[in-house]
Image 1 (cartoon, helix red, strand yellow):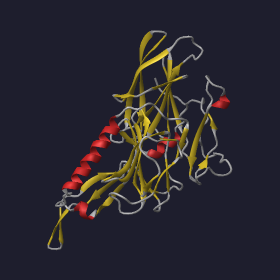
Image 2 (cartoon, one colour):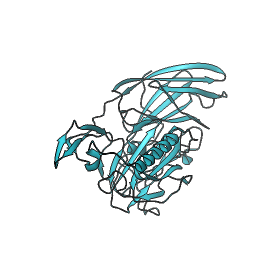
Image 3 (tube, helix red, strand yellow):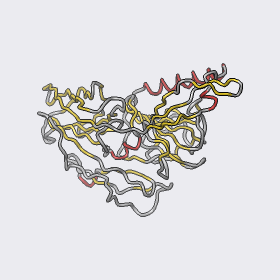
Length: 354
């Protein structure tokens, strides 16, 4: 069935009201935007977002899909490639005295990890930036009162135009085809790779709340999500560069301007899964938000957290730097939703509820 707009939610728009004053760090707390809900008093259901002064969270769009016994609400800043989507599944009749059990939700042939809440189920979905625009199939298998059903829906996904940098970038040592890490460096690279693989394969409990935060105290994107650029490949011979075919690199996150020592904040509630130096990433933090949702922060100058710490959205976790494979001070931040990279800032528009 076709989705349609819902008026059940009040969203963050350009008319946001800023609460006077600041939190303990220079991020502004936007108005506690009321999200009405049938199962709790309206005054108790809010979404909180902390952002730099002058930054406006994009308005969110809702698509509603109604089946025989359930409703699926999808929310996104844009229903397009490379964006984060928030999903809710609940009974059509909340007053119905029958339990809802969602056995699985499949979106575009991928199983979606769900969390059960008092009002139904919730999930985050990543719209793959590498999958072409068009119609996506969504299937929910569930039971209400013990009666099993499957509902099938179609979701339209638009194309995103990603930036392409035509000039090839010279990475110095890393552009030289004859460069080889030392034996000790290779051991370090292998240890880093093994730890990242282990962490990103874990399925932790859902730790998200209705709080979200921009990762910086100012907003200036120096390299956007999924930007494509060429990197030089060459061999040095007698002071001359013998060029090989350039290598295409894809930017799986965003770069935000920052000076060394400026603050970096957690984008959402979670648990610190990695907080240590890595070969390419430099000082590196990975936050596990549960259900294989991870945000990570690269090239930091220093760390303010340790592995195993619990953090809230907007907590200070580190400082901007230029460590690892970096040419200047900046913050690289990425967001992965069940192995799919999405634009990290697209998460800020999502009305996640507890």
